[in-house]
Length: 324
Image 1 (cartoon, rainbow, N blue to C red):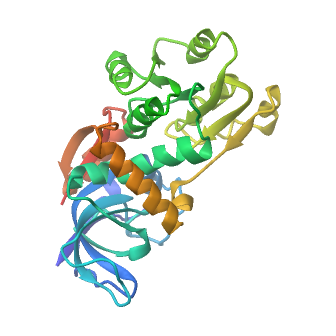
Image 2 (cartoon, one colour):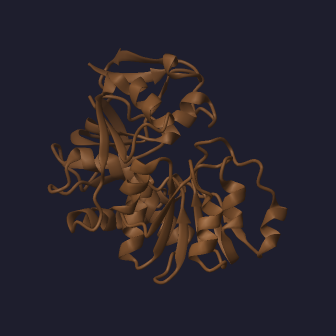
Image 3 (cartoon, rainbow, N blue to C red):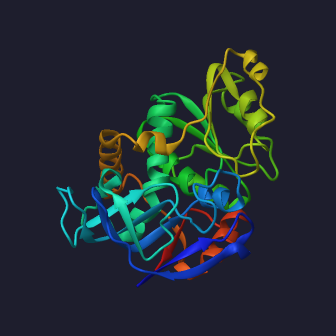
């Protein structure tokens, strides 16, 4: 037997409950993974609240990244063995003790990368990777703006940008989060609770603005993010923690022949070659100490409601991990 945490229907954390179920059997092309660690992300909250369309009518297992050990192998699977350490990221399904995962979404986990670190960076680390290498390939000497700099993605992105020689300006809420982001690659960080980040960006760029703004906050920041961009700059909207950025109109881009993109990690990970390359680079950065993943909170899987409340209430920095 195994168990999972399901959302009975869209709603607040009261819809979450534990259900016992038979241990899954991997079908052709899949492997059964026994989870050792599971990551928690804003996308899990978006699905729980019903902001993203559900792939099932009810009883949705949330969770989008995990790491563990291969316990069984389906027909047609090669290149993996029982007992192997692996990790993956997929929308939904990881809030469980066991999960059958298609092999094309699974990557081998090096022995020197702990399970909790892997579960903390598969979604967030690969998100940081595609944002600064694919959505907007930030170049040495450029200046960019990154919101939620003290969050899971933000802390990883700040360190990665620094290794690329990119000047990063961040935003965060409160003096502790500002200090944390400053210690993770950011040259300057605006406390949005007391400062105007548009004014700070203009001051630090001599009025020119930034080459790109990476915005996962959405409604509360998107218009100001546009104001921060230099001519021909790029707005990368990759989340909506404050609500969908529906206040942005195409006409706003006319102020500087601006570009906007709304990428999704899972469009990138659908390419097996991209996934393997990006994961290998991510693990290498961690191994070399160029990137350090900060785990702020670790809870038993059954306490996922507390994890969601902490994340949505902006009470955490870094990553949250659930342990079955």
